[in-house]
Image (cartoon, rainbow, N blue to C red; front, side, top):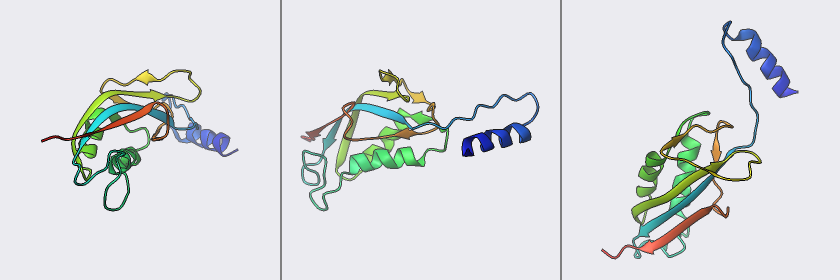
Length: 139
């Protein structure tokens, strides 16, 4: 009922000749494969901090996605910038980034940037398409 009411309202107030599509859908899912080189004096091999136990890489990704405006553009390099600021992280190497919209059967690669179909992106660290390999930074 809310979607119908909202779409009706938008069609009344929009300028003439402007096409509008009102969408209410679940978030696009982020797929991610990356290597994170970490400081072993700060972080453990599972990505959790020695002091505190939280996982700063996963938190950084979630914070980046939550900071995007609705229909905001996902930019891989900006996500990397945020991850590199996380405690214990030394180097981030992204192998692949992809998304899945609704019930599409496959993930679609993201080259450098992407505007989500549903308007926003969700990140589930437990998703099989999310692989974060933690490697000790030797230097």
